[in-house]
Image (cartoon, rainbow over all chains, first blue to last red; front, side, top):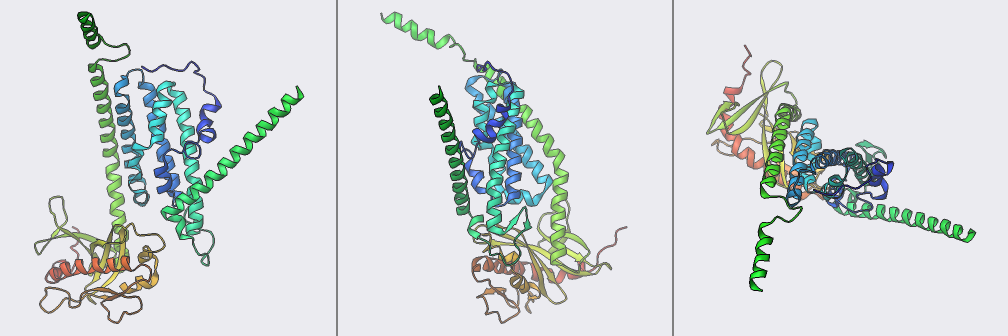
Length: 219
Length: 237
């Protein structure tokens, strides 16, 4: 039902878009709920990132495949059913892999259903591109999301528990900075990362501006 | 004029707008996708169910070894109306785990307890030693206490030491505990049935005491006359 974009080629950019230029967390600021809630340790962050990536890829593929047959009026309902199916599947799989991991992620696995990154990708990308291109893009988005969660999770675990992936790094005399593994720590660390990414972006833009300025001068 | 505009409205209602699908195709698409989804979910649920059950059994087993340190094998019973039934599909009731040593002698009994903590319910498994009539160990099965503060009920060695031999004798009438288990202010523990709280995690420590007291008051008097029944592990034929 929806018009497909004319360019069917899969470029490096269709993957890297989510990784850097449109990183779902650091640039688009989407899916903040799991970003803040489950990143109190690197392991939780990684598991959440991988689970979300799986749902992104699987639902992106199916939505792209079926988009021709889905009537416009019920497309959102259909996407939600497809997404919920894959979330339930990953929910069972995580339970089978490790109960401890499942308990520490709590309700946030089920809440992937309402993660706006996934619905956003289904609506804005997968329904307009070929299945393969959608999968590549979803992989990039998932990788970007996992990367962002790991950025938060490792800093918070390092400062809040003095460990990384459960391995003690600083020894017994380290006084953990407990606020970092509590909810306020999530906001603090997210703010610091956003500051860093914005600074990097601005610096790059200024450089480009300077280069283009030189070029015009030369001409 | 009036007729003309009327017919316009009419034609808008019946002639489908281009790009708008008839309801029948919506129904077909939605129901077939829902059907495929249902099939997938049931399939995965069936595939993972035995693995998940095995994981849960292993988690309980690990906890049992911790709260009944002398035990090598365990058996689950269900307490129902003052009778102990072997755990099976049909029986319902409070789960009680009996721990046996290598000779099949009863060395401890474990049961679940729960109470409201600071953030959410704290679920525990505790081990009762019939020889010393005391609680020998606790293990938190599930909790959401604050990291660094409330989770000291797991990590604080001094707090765990409360449960090396926490007195849980049943009184003469076999109706209740001789001394209710209570949590007292940090540093003021005087009796063997008191739990020394953790400074900075009083609410969590009190919840542990409350959970143990509630469960022990209810279970232990009922279990006393039944000790004979589970005293020896029945040999597997």
